[in-house]
Image 1: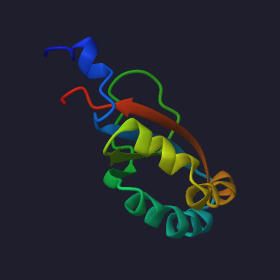
Image 2 (image 1 turned 90 degrees about the vertical axis):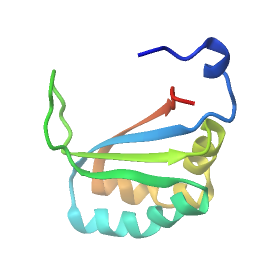
Image 3 (image 1 turned 45 degrees about the horizontal axis):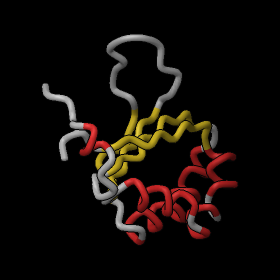
Image 4 (image 1 turned 135 degrees about the vertical axis):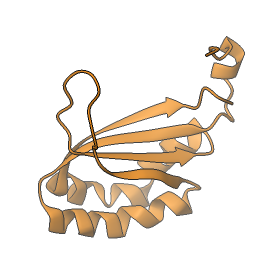
Length: 110
């Protein structure tokens, strides 16, 4: 598999993924969070690629039971979504609903 060139890595228009690893603390709060946060993804130009329970951990230790992948047109759009007032309104509910780690990754295939 070829590695992206350094110029490609710096491309501001490369798709970006928000990868979320989460452990549910309160399922009712998760539903409340999803009702608020979900629409902010589409409004910001993002799309859910995958969302569900972790099916299997192939190597190493992974302490989370859910994995969510959201694709955005580029890193700036992903960051703008996360920092938006609309999404930030959902953060206090998220903190009650789950323990989560958010990772931002570039798409190496562009």
